[in-house]
Length: 335
Image 1 (tube, helix red, strand yellow):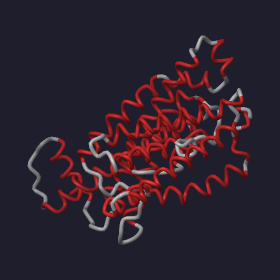
Image 2 (cartoon, one colour):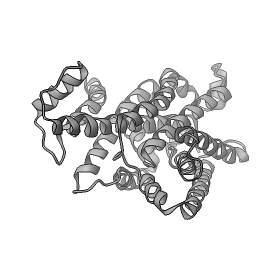
Image 3 (cartoon, one colour):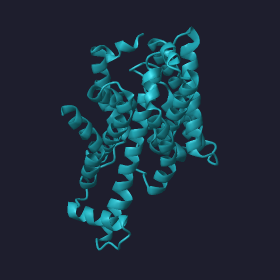
């Protein structure tokens, strides 16, 4: 019974935090007004509410909620995937360099090649970063936790240096927007960005959910997975490609938001267990809820909009210290 309540609570959490986010803001709006505005929009009815409430809810708050939920789910799903296939609880898109690679692709598109779609550039370079990290870590044979983390740090630093070079060379007017975007924010959310980014994030999360049971086999090791008839190399390529697409799509609309792919899968694993059949979908829900909550804090803690990447970094640092003190909780995956 307790387990069912936990699963129900995690599954319901995105909707709970979405309601809180709709209600909480500098401009107070009554719950009944919110319900009437949403009802009129969903059923294409003419709303009797004032233009201010309608604009705040439909054009500002709701797009931020939807986009933050999509980004949180994408980053969390990518984190679960990478931790499973690399059998390493310290792996996440940020540590492996996927976020830095995607950030470089986006910066390159904005600074030098505006005709090249940002989403495509983010996906290409996140894919380059992930496979480069994988090849570096595998150069010593079997992938170890230490080699994987160190390779990710090296690749992340490399792409961060390339981003810094572009920031140094770019026009000052573009530099301001690039610097703010790299901090991670949903302040420029609108429905058009949601439609574009959601295609990549949903396309990435669908195979992750449908193939989640194979992560159980891959997380046992290559030999065990092959003995079960799993095509290891093919599935690993699919998972890495899907994770790269999810991260690239997320970074292209929100900038770099770290720690989500590390914290949320860990917390969800503590609650639902290591079985990816449950861990994957509930990590997606928990990631969406966490990101909605973090963005709600970012826009309400002060009179100005704090980049949400700062909020996740402030929460991620003590969480990482906690993991180190308890031995990361991943000894069962080996060294």
